Image (cartoon, rainbow, N blue to C red; front, side, top):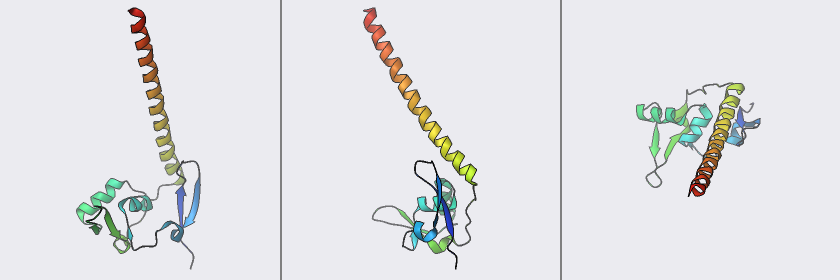
Length: 123
């Protein structure tokens, strides 16, 4: 039996790789919401909507408030199937937006500093 291979993107978003499901999946009989979203390549909101509509059965852990979704309840669900290019663009877009946000913050700090210096020199 050939092991099913899963594509993954490193946390830095720089490179793709492959692992078997047994290397990726935890050794337990349930998934968390985030794990399902990642495995099926869907937004977390979609998984929450499936819970609300009853498309996926889950149990809420009363101790920590986290959902546990049985692996068996995912029978018939297929990954959305984003291409490598779509995944790479999504992560590149996220990286660029973070960089843009950081640059905006630096520009705002520089402007505030210049305004303070200008107000001191006006006194």
